[in-house]
Length: 233
Image 1 (cartoon, rainbow, N blue to C red):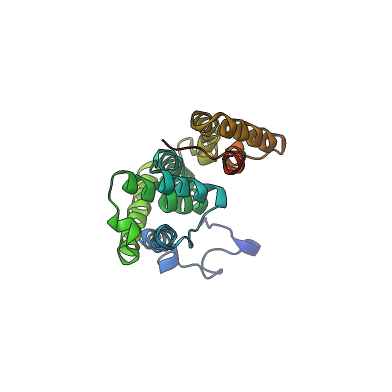
Image 2: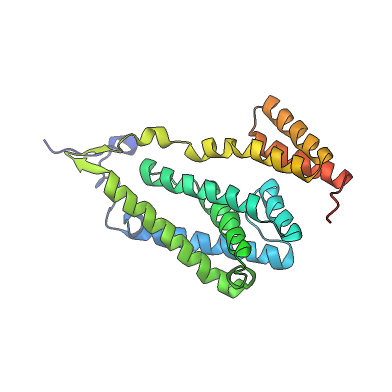
């Protein structure tokens, strides 16, 4: 008996009008889609760096990039963005769901620009027209890696699919992000005692609110830092 994949209303693929050979269902189209999104996000970060507006990300995360631009230290935002990108690429490859917030917005929009700036490679980040193709190439590479890993790890036999334990990878990016909270608190404490106390209070409030403590630590440090500015020597 012919096996079909049931979709909405019990229709098979042909009855539902799904064509696996079309652009929207083709594997080769995925890197193109990711590339276009990455180009837009990377160029938006370039606009933020040059004009102070345009970044596609959460305010607390963009504040980390702003702190790097003002202080010259891109380590925290580079590690934060790169860890999210790495976790989301693995998660997308194995689970089949790419979280755009962690991979494109945070990883491509913050992590990679911070890494380039830390390495003194400023042209692809600060030049808008160069940022567009740079983001496109980054997105194409991410999409190609995800498709490559999926083809290497997911085997089909008799219509069944195996992800080789990929279910434990779901939420890998969130699990990685939880470890950044204590690191941010430590970094804030090294900057100054008041800023460190603000980060601790913010993290505690977010913990009681059942939200990721990373955002609370960043906001707490920013608020107290505005009241008790850190004197740069």
